[in-house]
Image (tube, rainbow, N blue to C red; front, side):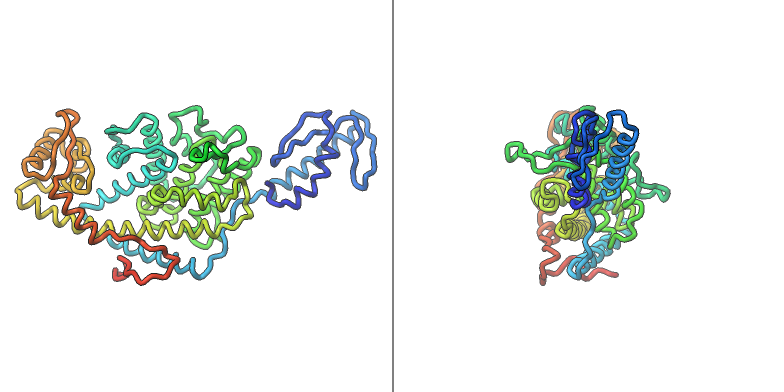
Amino acid sequence: MVGSTGTAQVFEEFQDSVLGNPGYPARRIDGRSFDKCGDHCATLAGGKAIHLEKDSTILIALRQLIFDIYTIIIYILLMMYRAEKLTPPEKEVIAKVEEARKALKYNLASPRRWTGLLRRNTLARAVRGSNSIEGYNVTAEDAIAAVEGEEPLSADREAWLAVTGYRYAMTFVLQLTKDKNFVYSEGFLRGLHFMMVQHDLKKNPGNWRPGTVYVRDESRGGEVVYEGPDVEMVPGLIEELVEYLNESEDCPHALVKGAMAHLNLVMIHPFSDGNGRMARCLQTLVLGREGILEPEFSSIEEYLGRNTQDYYNILAQTGEGSWHPKNSTRAWIRFNLTAHFRQATTLLMRTKLMDVLWQELELIISRRGLPERLIYAVADGAIGYRVRNSSYRNLAEVNDITASRDLKAAVDADLLIPTGERRGRIYVGSAELRALVDKLRQEHIKSVPDPFVPTTLQLPFAANPQ
């Protein structure tokens, strides 16, 4: 679809007449096949027949001129999905998101030993959530292992390669949020894609897709639910997206800018595979660079992974099956604002839970005469993660011998339960620890309402310092 359907209609006669003769090879633009005419007559304005010789220099120049003009118009009119003007309800939700993020930032500002665990767990949830949308499912422990650069406990090879590829890309993105000299470019997008899917050369890592791309819904027998724009349009659309990312002074808010970057990349579908993960990773980068919050806490990928069908539905509603950049993006923007509100509020509740849990565990460890550093392993076990010697070593910054001795002490104190053989041994939290966390979750983790629906529910950030 060209940016203007009216322009496409104007050139219908051009397609059928001036370029309609099969004497020359076909060229394809915007989904239409054009054949340059040979030595036959061409019917032009007013239906007049103009007989031209095959080798006429005038005819060749005329054909080329008209074709070049049409090509230029196509690319001038290339357009992306645009953000809608924000309404008062949307501005109110943005204010709520900013309030929640301000409270979260306040909670993270004071140095606490548990913030490292929260940051690691949050990044692991984002990596796990984004990959689960594409059908690459791993356990919470394996997502953490990917973030920490460890080997998986149970992930299959294909899922593990996808998750670690995404972790490489996310790590790169998190570093770029701090680079003041960074600018978006076509090369950057290609490089990020290579990091994600370099393990599978059939997916053309780092290259634009070579042809038409279709998105199929396997739950509906492989039915095509989306067709990307023609491959000839991809370079021009990417150029426009890059320009938008580097400028976009007219964007109403950074949250909207991130949402539109996500939408346009996933709708352009420039790669053979990995477009969704690329779009979600790009959104996280945009938010991190805009200073919304620390980049690990800016992502909504965990939320999207937990609400995958709603995510698919809103994309389908916005795109209507193919490239329709004139469609309204309001529902998409509202979906993203809702995701940001719920994710930020959930993270805020988790900070409060971690703070209380940490205090309780410090008392338990102190009373049993255990080393203070054991709290990292005990906290992971209490939350429900399987603890490994290697993961504990990384957190506590101790050697293998010390880690083994500490974990045995935690087992002797009835805080951790060992399973497996010596080299593959893992530890889980005791019933006492799990009961403590269940109690705290009931007290501190609540369902987060739809921010666009009025509610009397007391939100966790309402009484926080400003």
